Length: 402
Image (cartoon, rainbow, N blue to C red; front, top):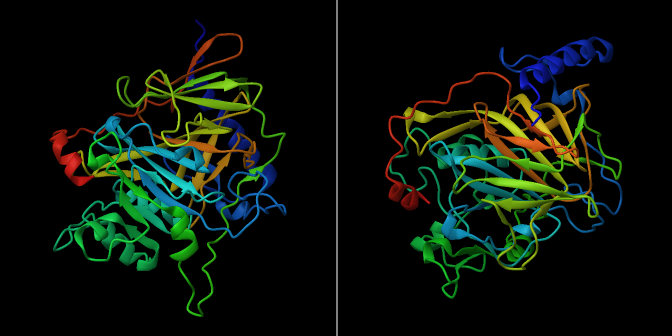
């Protein structure tokens, strides 16, 4: 078994980034001693979207640009997921304790009339939504029903960020009778699962009938969040035909295998092929990003994760059977996250769907397999300690919070 030293890779990355900054004269930001220097968002600007192409997948597409940011449960009892295969971008990140994850999915090319299971939001999910500038669909969240609001509260966040109520779609409001139950939310009582994991959303109805409007009545147009796409995407330093990203090895273990014929990574979960619970489609991604972020817990409480998705850090990308070590940068909540290669150039994705695995800086145990069969460990390359939680809490509380 051949294992590359991540520290050697990190050192090489730092040297290349530092050497390239003088040649390109791009503005730089220095994050922390363990992070590389990264080019600022201003050096890249917005990507142009070719006529007839999607800004979020690069595939053939036409229509109004209406992304919707949706919270989807990853509880074992909420699998398989309903119409997650139709999402353009899917984030997976820790939302409770050291290993429990949740999905945040961006739907833009298609708006299915049945998506689920919808679950709650944490503050950092709302912070991710900021870069998409679009409606958010969730079923309650951190402090959503607290009176008075606690310190860490998604309602307080929405208020301080001036997010209009027309962008906040919470199923708990319908459940509690605060608003009439409408065609955006429902619970599929015929599903073969607990009703807690049967919350669904009709994104087609939202996009067509509940879309936010400007003061003059015209439909709101979110700011551009276009990626760069090409059938000749950024090439990597190594091949990668399999990728393993264990948040834990029991219930939250995504992995990917590369299908050279389709040029896609086929997704697995806990060692099983992952299929859509509604359409039966195989879950696939043309681009897989592993984004290292600082993870803290407010008051050392397992239910209060703080995932820092601004400033910047290291990332590993897997595109078209290639591994690319680079960095990411997002200066403010309003900026889009930019993924860069070692030369400071924004990555060019392969047209198709993208999965973004947000992992803590201290994450270990990840690996990819190159075409020659060698297994390569990959991580931040620095010895960062996991935060110490006072206690993991009662998992029944996790269910109550959603």
